[in-house]
Amino acid sequence: MNPTAVPSIRPVLADHIWAPSSERSRTAVRTAVLVTGFALFTAAMAQIEVPLGFTPVPLTGQTLAVLVAGASLGMRAGAASQGLYWLLGLIGLPFYAGGEGGWQNGTGATLGYFVGFVVAAAIVGRLAERQSVRSLGASMSAMALGSIAIYVCGATWLAHDLGIPVAAGDTNAIELGVTPFLVGDVIKLALAGALMPAAWATVDRLRRG
Image (cartoon, rainbow, N blue to C red; front, side, top):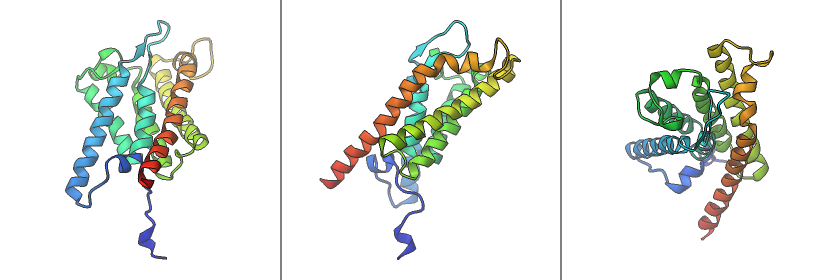
């Protein structure tokens, strides 16, 4: 078997939506456009916000965008899209939840969640490169892993920032930064998990002509 016939990283969904060019410069432009596009998509989804008075972390549509970005772009580009989203908010663009932006908003109590977005997109993206988002069960599992990564990073930093325990005591980071969002995030990961197999089924039908 010719070893070059089997790519080390299989195509992700974006490769079929916008086929890569063989020219390096055009491929770089394509990647930059996709990364920027998903960063803007995340910013738009962040504006779908439900504030919760008992915690500084609002319920938003961001995590749905994060999971879809990773699954669509792959590990590196997916993580880059979320890193760019975070950076654009840090420099003052109103990209965070509630139209917020700036250094204080990007490095305050929610910093861990922004880091978690990058990590989650990378995890889901890597699984997507292994074709693990094409079936419903595998896709749901990938989205669940991504969501867990966001929670771990977010709750750990929230505990540090507020000076509270992660899980122990009457007031802890799990209570403030995880529990209130479980139902909403289960819905979002289910949507993302169902969207990917449906998108791949559409691509497969188009390819068969």
